[in-house]
Image (tube, rainbow, N blue to C red; front, side):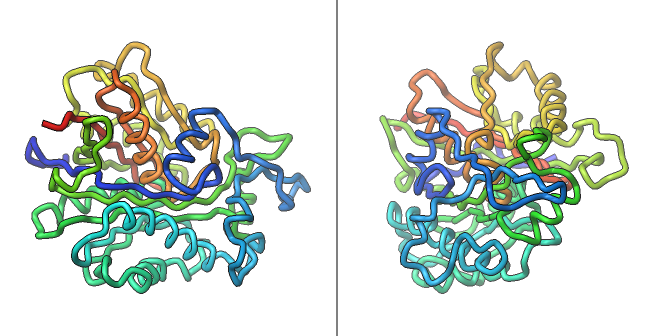
Length: 356
């Protein structure tokens, strides 16, 4: 079990994102709250000759770029580099560091992911040489839960370092021929005739963290703190022969909830993407920990609006939770969790505290 001092947490200094629903955190949060969907039928047909549903970034976002963002076979790396730079620039515009800082980047877990993606961290270091120190960088390859593991790495190895800020983020796109072909072989893509699957999407999300309350984001007299995440593994994950019991997410909840305030938590932000087995996993984790939640706890799974965004999931969910928490007077804390196709599971308490 993770062992951290009781008062160990990071303040949120800024967030940035690009999603199929918006070009920043506020736009995406507003669209999710309004139940706007980015789903559309694509020109990609599965092996049963059915068009799949996707949630793509708007083509207008890429106007003036020297690549075709609709080319799912040749533009993947350049599109990811572009949206990664765009999301990270929002963070640095809000709170530019005085010296280069560590970057922890969440990465996809799929073995079919194109090999250019490890270059994202180098691309960011080249794009922001005054703000990112590549020597302090780390990449974590576990997909949806990678952002949670990135936060755990920050707590474990960087919390006591003399860093003004730490940058945690992830960028991903399932709209790539190699990845779609692999998912099609597993019958995991949603079509007009099949609903037990997920809608592949793309996004980038970043969180700027600090230990200094004077550097924290302040809205309506409150700051956001991120407590130490709970990290666990599910023996019966999608690619395992073990029974799928939901024990991994249950343990991630328990570890995260060790830092929870005494007041019941009214809302959960989830990585559920529409595939049936994720609902079973959530049910197990919630029932075993329901004493920590309000009787009418609200469960949010924004992938219903913007699709499955892979390695960008955790930072985007945390940023959306923080945005909602700051805007909701009566709420004090939310739980955010994310589950990978593989064994990794992660959960975290996002809390709002008043400025003293």
